[in-house]
Image 1 (tube, protein in one colour):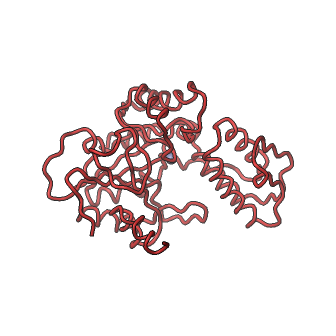
Image 2 (cartoon, rainbow, N blue to C red):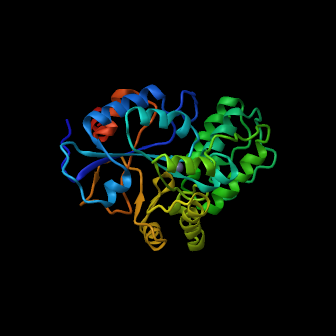
Image 3 (cartoon, rainbow, N blue to C red):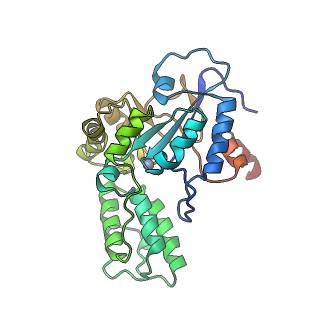
Length: 314
Ligand SMILES: [Zn+2]
C-alpha cells in the first residue's frame, strides 16, 4: 500500500489503446485499459491535467490523477474515447504535428513497421554516417535478425544528435523500400479539433518527435518547441500551456527553451508520482503504462514498480 500525500498525484502516460496486436510495439488492449480506468476511478480523483497543474487543489478524499496520451494516434477516437466516456474520465492528448501533416506515425513507429514487414536482407546503399561498428550492419541472415537489429538501432537512434538520426533514418527507410508506409493511423487536424471540442485537452508533442536533449542547434530546438505550438493554434485553434517532451527527453537547456517559448509546464516520463513541491513544473514525471499484466500495471500506477523490481532483482 502506498500512501499518497495531498501534494502527490499520479499522471499516467499512454500511447495507444487498440485490440490490434503488434509484436514491435503493442498498443494497450482495451480490456486492460478498462481495468486501469476502473482502478483509477476507485482509487483516485481524476481531473484534467491543466487543472491538476495550475489550479489550487480542492480538498479531495482521494489522491489526484490525470491521464495523458502522446503522439496523436487515431485510435484515441475509436478505442480510447468510448472507454473514457463510459467511466466519465477526463484525459489529454499531445500530438506530433508532422504526424498530422504527413498522415504518418512517428519515426520510431515507422522504423518498427518497416523492419518488421520488409523482406529485404541486405542494404544496398547503406550510409551509416558516424554510427559505431556494432550498428554498421548491412546484411542479415533472416527476417528475425533484421527485426532484432531494427529494435536495437531504434533505441540507439533516440539518443544520438538529431542530424545523425535524421540521416540514418532516411538511409534505412530508402533501403528497405519494399514496404509502403502506414498512412491513416494518425489523427487529422479535423480529428484534433473534434477531440478538443469533445472536452479533451490537446497539447503539442513537437514537430518531428526528436529527443529534444540531443538537438545541438538552438534554432532547431526552438522550431520543435515553438512551431508545434503555432501549428496547433493555427490549424486547430488550440493554445496549450503544456508541452510534452518526445521520449521524455529534456535537460536544463531544453527546459530553458521551453520556458522561453512561452509554455508553463513540460511533461517528462518517469516511473514516479508527481509531487508539486518537489518537482520542477518543466520536468513533470509521468508514469507510462504498457500492454502487460494487470499486476504490473497496478504497481506502475501506484509508483511502486521500482521498489518491487529492486527487491526481486537485487
Ligand atoms: Zn511520443
